[in-house]
Length: 605
Image (cartoon, rainbow, N blue to C red; front, side, top):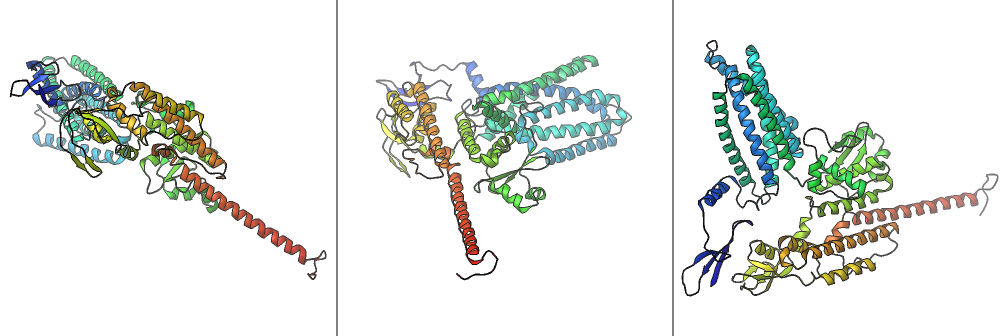
């Protein structure tokens, strides 16, 4: 039997083989068990709805929290539509539908005024709070839905009681709903971007819209049924209250199900508090569970912090140029920020080339400063060392702070694969890859091997250095010797991460090997930090041997080492200037003593 193709839709789909049986010429489809695939009607309907409402490639094309979020989001959309249907009746009565006392012109004017105030409210709210919607997307999602419920409650309970003020009430509630539209749309975009892990933002957004449209359609018919058969106002009011409570609860559960891997102020402060307290880094899942999604913050600073202040505010407070120079001297010239405390807040002043990681770093310095205000002046490099450690821990725990450039370099390493298909040679800029022959090992770039393995078109050959005994010896040597051992691979961390996360089943004892590699990396990074600290404390009086240190390990001290060298150079210049001033002072003193007698008269040499 000859196998032509292997086909599988997503990682959880059934794998189908296209084969030619012995003594036959036709190609047939069989499962891995050798049976013909049976497509049942129930399964085909399920697949139809999956293609209709879920992104292409689900579940591999979305984040792991997508399904749990969508379940609660569907429930809240259903409840919101039913509430809207119940309040539409009250709104139409408010504009005069069914009343002989109201003519079409007055109803039209009321409707236009209502929509006009809504448009104005949308513009003003976008100007006022637009920049915060992406930062606190969870909170604003909850706030928007609660505000929408309040607006519908006013339409249902207050509007019928004051028909003469219906225009003013409708203008107010429409403005509230317009704010809901801005906040809800912006936060939905932020959450959609989080779920679209393969750059499929448009697909995820369109399928989310399709789901919501379907739910709204069903809920609208349910709402019409309830309005037709429930004529008792008290029952309708009770139903509205119940649906509103379920709507708010479902919204809270939906945003709590989302696990964002980026830092905003609330999540950052939670992670910083744990790090300063225990030296440990919380995972994104732990931080997201602790983050408040309603009001307030789990952790707050002791002072108000403003990021991106104008230099005018700094010069207004530090009017003396010497005070300003002393402040600037506390920071390294390579930093992209300054921190200064004024009367009412701690301000962060940013360089025009600042990057997002620099802003996160500046906030780390602010938190350290508020713990001990002498740290920036007296123990600047200690804070720098803590920041490097915090950054490494955050990357290890899965926060979105990965040095992508280093991983890109590591992906060019060669790795052995055993393909299960045939293909001609591939010509790349980096070189030519040999022809692929099923079952014959060959070497390919790591990025290509990972791609083929994800498509289940090959099996990865375990690198020779991924051996438990070899890694144990390296670990013991790193603990025993001051010098760095030569690693079997320059990009061992990148290779291990990609291989063990993509194909752990191809590596014998993968869990033990993963633990050993992580231990070796931690020992080497700790040794590297100690080496740099000793170098700085000795004021560069001796050389440092960084032989066999890998690029990724050097990245952990990259922010510190250039600053340290610059600091030592400035310190040496200061010493030279001090010695020069001392010599000049001594010469002046000696000249005065030899040229002037006790009586103050000049005397000959």
